[in-house]
Image 1 (cartoon, one colour):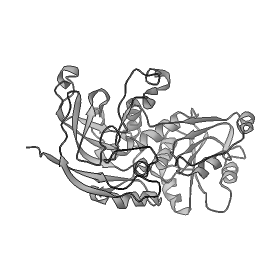
Image 2 (tube, one colour):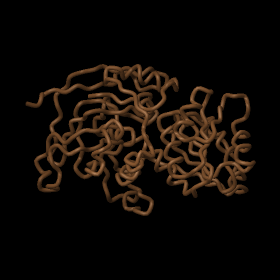
Image 3 (spheres, one colour):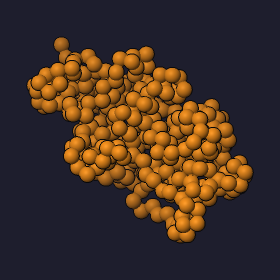
Image 4 (cartoon, one colour):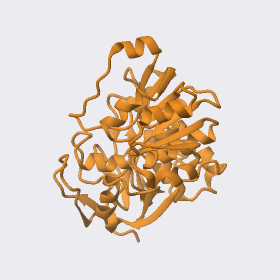
Length: 359
């Protein structure tokens, strides 16, 4: 008999930039799926750096239940699911990511060439329109249900969860740089959750990787993920000069910024080579500013792009690297009750890998 209540971590802090995120573990009434919704019993969820950003108000108003890297199984079907898609069955494994639903008709969604669904103007998101994955149960609209095919049955839940946001974000950002194997790519913020996965994916895709982070403590970790070189941004030697020296004075073909600091974006200009691409991934506080002169782009032929998570197809592509053991997420186990301390570790940049919380 399924319980009528479920455990959840409820955000209790003020969602302000300098506020320390606080949570309360509660038992709430178990969600009931609407006619076109599916109820998921989550087995676990991993913690993403953007969960901290949401808790601090960097991504606009959010709800009280965060989390968007969950894995679980279908527990209950809405009354209309059998009519809409009889292939959806109780017990199927699914992933819960940042995007919960899209409209499919806006100018973004219909731009198939640019895979615009990740920027749907009517998108519904975890922790906003729908409660997040810091909970034992959550609801998903059928239209955007991310089923994990049986071909991935050999990948455990704890290795799938980090790919649902952090992993696919890193993979898609690097994919969008349109590089050729053997070219140099810089991952800025390489010791973080997204950054470390970026190093691993870039290495697996055949690129030469320079990892950049603050302090010497992340060097061995980044090297273990596949970085050829490590640049300590706090070493006293200009990071841009170090990158230029490592690339025979040319600079990198792409710089992927995953560090949540304006200085990382500013310094990226000094690392780019001719016709290079600056790929923007990390989200900064609204007041953060970056300055540049247009001649930098005119003279060097640079391109600036932004990359936002990935499509459901991108998730499956990213999981193929895990299945082949080319990318193996480094995880640490935790419990939902540990959430406040885990958030603090992320804010201090102390975490190596991804925390996975049992539910």
